[in-house]
Amino acid sequence: MSIFRPLSKPDEPNHYQVAGINVICPHCQNQKFYESRIQYNIQETAFAEKEYTVRMATALTCSRCSMVVYFINKPNKIMA
Image (cartoon, rainbow, N blue to C red; front, side, top):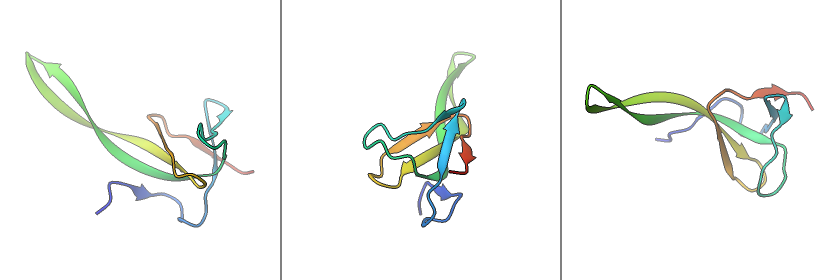
């Protein structure tokens, strides 16, 4: 079972923007990514006890080199 849940078909990478800036792979400079939603845990201290909270994030996987870039706010899919 995978921790990733695809939001687009695997054969259709898309272009994305975050805060009005195009997302570009920092490794290979590609601009097409596969989108997935992931869960992550954060550790919070409440009343002197540590608790874990589950949150959601978006993972964009580069269609060329497979580098994964994570975003807390959902990136906007753009038509290129």
